[in-house]
Length: 258
Image 1: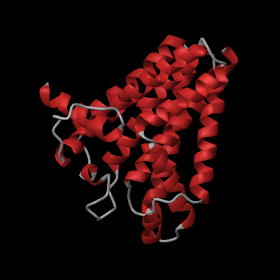
Image 2: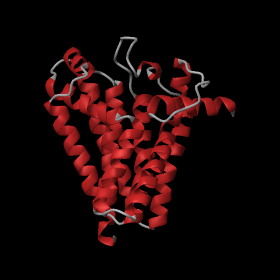
Image 3: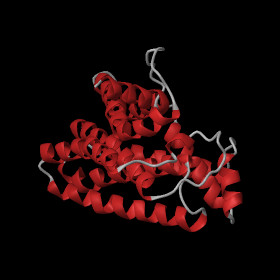
Image 4: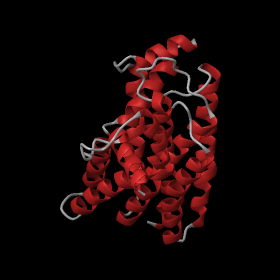
């Protein structure tokens, strides 16, 4: 149990800005194993977002409350996944060879593709959530944060890491994950979504799963075609696109009953 707790703290340390005890041990092997808890980081992120949303909903207009909730979610993760999405937009938008795409994604500067992609993505998230009632916004966040991270974990399981440099942020997870790790991630990723669907008694939300599969298939095909696998930025992009798809599904499949 102590080891699992340390793995969770390692995941919090790497994937969020939240403080952990300074005595928490860290090594690359632990970070690789801690990937199983990436969807659980979604639980933590959604809890913080919902806490902010709940407080603000009673003192501020709904749109402001939702917007600030999204902002706090970005702060919790340090824009870790958003940065990956922007880098992937720049790389795949501006590069025509594997080497050029990887070089562009490694560049810390953001380009036109990244800026526009991130702006459109964040706007779509906000527009989807603003159409929902208070409780459905909360349930959408509860479902989206863990499940989107699980989709990213599946990429680690099925695809190969393509960068060769040792200083890459995602290098420690390049060895992939085992099937038991994937199963743990699946439990943490799927349970909140299923709970939200059952609470709403809206089983058309099951259509979210094939929608996520299509989004994942497209991104995975793009990665495999142009660079032969994934990078850390690609994982961030998968998480962000998946999160947005879940919000979009909640909006389309439940807004008439808001």
